[in-house]
Amino acid sequence: MKIKNICCIGAGYVGGPTMAVIALKCKDILVNVVDINLERINAWNNKDLTMLPIYEPGLDQIIKKCRNKNLFFSNDLNTGIKNADMIFISVNTPTKSQGIGAGEASDLRWIELSARQIAENSTGHTIVVEKSTLPVRTAETIKNILESQNKTGKNKGETTFSVLSNPEFLAEGTAINNLINPDRVLIGGDDDVAIDKLGSIYERWINPKKIIKTNLWSSELSKLTANAFLAQRVSSINSISAICESSGANIKEVTKAIGMDSRIGANFLQSGPGFGGSCFKKDILNIIYLCNFYGLNEVADYWSSVLKINRWQQKRISKTIIEKLFNTIAGKKISILGFAYKANTNDTRESPAISIAKDLLNEDALLAIYDPKVSAKQITKDLDSKQLNEKQIFNKNSGWYLSKSINETFNGADAIIILTDWEEFKKLNLKEISNLMRKPAWIFDTRNLIDLEKEDLYGINIWSLGNT
Ligand code: NAD
Ligand code: UDX
Image 1: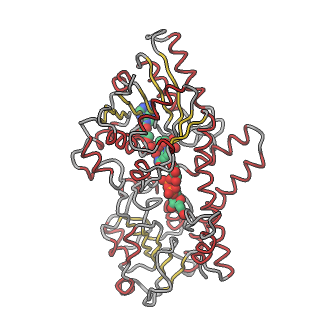
Image 2: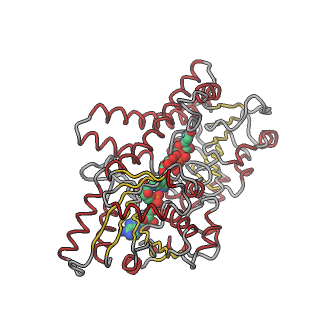
């Protein structure tokens, strides 16, 4: 039987774009994306495409083409599940904040809830696909819940399930391109018929040679490993950026020299304020938990050091800023360029900007934040403090506010900190900026966006990561 109806539980950064691309490429399949968060569903259904809940280049055009044709967003989980031949689970799997494994293990409550909802509402045979990133052997838990319901639940003996792992490798900001032209698609499972059915969906637009089939546990572990390796590269190059600053080497030159070695490769070698995003830290913590569980303590320590360098990189940036500004930033206006953890997304989860801004606020600075896509509501949540009103800003009270324009942030500022690699920060007019800032003025460029060889700094001091 061909797959005609897909349901995706979870309308987030993975569920939304992934299902939009499946709907775009498979016009004959009805795709229902369901979520318990009504506000998010309403935003997905908003006629104004600038109000979609996530910003991802190219996504709005796909939504425009497919929404309410073969792509639907709803909070009616039961109906979505009941009608589906194939159900993707794309719910969040954050690190546990309390209880056994707190700070390391994934919190699987939303996965379990989804499995129970599927068990209660599905009919006939259903292929259940793990799209969320999960600890190794989670598929066993999902199978267990589904099978128990079949023995005792309301549809007793009438429902059957196949569970597959199909981790997602998209990166935010490039998600649509990653989904349309993936390096590979990974499907783990032991039911060949189900694997072929899922594979045949991807084969509509992806070369079958790129579709890899493995057992369930290899698939789950491969996803964690890919993220751990990527994060490790970022920590490695960030550790070298500190050596550059101390030794007189230049990080851009070192990166170019090592990146040209085909065994190392040039990608993912950009030093910066540390990796953010909802995945790297969480997935490494997951590996650490797994290692400790299996008694592999040395392996756990190895991966812990990747996280340690990431924290240290953020702390040393805050410390450098305070030191360069005469060890006091109380009442000083500091322009923060970028709050998202990377360019082309409105996502701020684990953004280095959060910890750096908090460090500066602890020293009583006045932060003028500018980000083209992040809302004041999100920053309020992240910094756990309300933005200042106009009178407080005028009086240079300590706190933060979201600037409406980038130029406003420079007005009277003592320092600019470039934290996100947004395209528009690569074209700053330093002459104009120098006229607006209070002297001595500083730029802290944590992304190496300003070309020190070519740019005239018009009297502004610069600290560029990985340079003396
Ligand atoms: P997200 O927080 O943006 O979205 C998850 C959604 O699931 C939320 O809207 C939430 O309301 C919904 N949800 C939770 N429980 C539910 C339930 N029982 N029923 C219906 N809806 C429910 O998360 P995300 O960034 O999309 O990540 C989802 C998963 O994909 C995670 O496991 C993550 O590790 C993985 N992943 C994320 C990325 C990424 O770039 N964000 C990339 C690859 C993999
Ligand atoms: C990551 C993985 O790349 C993706 O495959 C997985 O599915 C989800 O997690 P994402 O977190 O969205 O994707 O973005 P990514 O491009 O990997 O960047 C993660 C962080 O590392 C960002 O904060 C980014 O600024 C930083 N980074 C990345 C660097 O500092 N230097 C680099 O060279 C690359």
